[in-house]
Length: 328
Image (cartoon, rainbow, N blue to C red; front, side):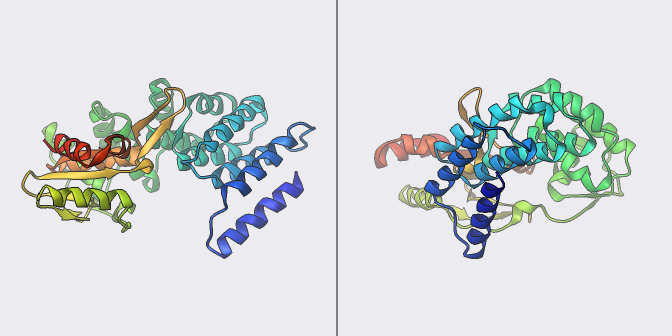
């Protein structure tokens, strides 16, 4: 196992040094070597699990093989659950978030079996928000334990979790939280959503609030191949649009249609969670859903184009019909 760990670290270091990605053949070969270790006696369970996690992280999250690898890894998580250390569990949660694979069974195992501290609980709550976990019993338990332990450094992330997990019933949780804590600095998106919430509940917005650092979502992104295709179709129907528009210094969006005050978001695979139990790949990630509710709170009509639906439409005519129906 130590030899495999060295081999893995060497490949990762080389990939970083030359700014290259590991090819599928190499990562699959590594995974098979890791799997073969389990046929013998495993001297260090947590090292074994962490090596497996690191290998799966290297696999392309859109490839077919990753679901098989992830499922096998989960079998070992289940088998050795009583031996898992907290750091191993946090490493596993980071894998799930980076691959967008929603696996609530393993999530529950981690929560039930390990000694949970506040750091792990917050990681679990972020997992639930980022991957749109619908296990409300688990979410409620986490919030009950964390609600009054959250400090100022984590407050904005905690508010994000509450807005995503309780989109229609977060008013009492949030308003009581704001009253109980001396909230001063908010990210712009949290400020937008909390301001709307206060107005809807006829509360006066506290004067002490100020807007803190910009959200990380403001990072410039390159135009995807799918966005270029949609741009061609918008030109074909002669519909005025603004591309890569910055909305209220808050979010960069794909297309803005000023004639209808519409925002058209072109969503590739990275915007969706894959739910292993439901076999569903059309659930928004928490971050993308959060962006949607922020833009709606600002008064925009947000429309979402899903890559699966767009490519399902065969031929130019079918794609034009789909786009028009989406914008009607």
